[in-house]
Length: 439
Ligand code: ASP
Image (cartoon, rainbow, N blue to C red; front, side):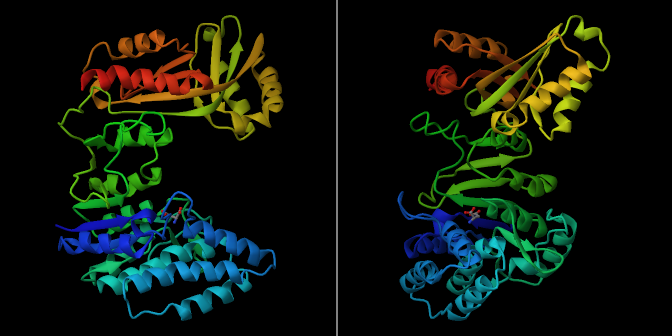
């Protein structure tokens, strides 16, 4: 068995956390490939090293003095080194970083140093080889991740390693410049490494004991999910489920490698398994509930719209021409509604409305703002009668007015549009009826 283990920022925020991580890795000889994040927050008021680096570089970029900020970052790493009693100095690395900051190497370079330095510490602490992500993870000239080149080089490089630490979050461009993934991108690196070594499992260690059924900010102590499929997680991640970077699923999914989300602070908990497919039923008909606020609905009305060929295309063309992507397009006989992100649409609304008038010649266009979408996701819904009925009666009992319903053709999810102010209530109502009522 080969395991790739990725540790998030809170798992590596201090020497104490590093020691927990060390114990986890040493307790299982199959944990040979390690992907660390940068040190995260030690408490609620703390700042992530990545954010410190962005802030420090912004000063350098503006030609201001950044030495105090850089020293604070140096101190964070030194505390970890001291706490682990490592005979390691990062002086050379920091001299190089200072030089690069003065030469304005870019914010991607700056942010990547968080993982880079943590990787050096981790490799010294574990006695594993350090493999710089810049040498094995590639982006193309447009800044898009280059999966084929990466997989070729990375798998060849790691085939020669007994054990290795590969820092998360960054890689390099064809011209050698450092480029990062979007925030939280170390999850992606872990997945890429798992694919490259054809791992049996990708363990993603964080500070919660797995994926929760819903947002703990809305429901206190929601139940954890034992097993979830990639597709279910993707639906939930898209709706803002906070566990894993949404792009982290693709590399392992292609190879059918399961992801196991684990808790560094409770290593005995089995966590959540994210798998390709499973015969295990989810505990509660539904697997998870997620959602987002801040949508707009553009209601377009035209008599006999449904028999006019090309009407939908013309309407959607108006959005495409303004570079706006749509979320859902429910339609009736004479109406068609387009759901879009409010912040994306707001500045372009009149341009889009004018284009719809011009191209599709509707009778009326009405814009409704401040809407939220709630996604109820579950592989079990397909085979359970009455799921939709239960959802909508629960919402009605809690005085939540439903503005839109969209059931994906996979019957894996039901998306419900409600007013922003009903968002939390809607999630509570659905959680109560499927989870609390079944405990
Ligand atoms: N350190 C980076 C961030 O804070 C990447 C990561 O932790 O995954 O976003």
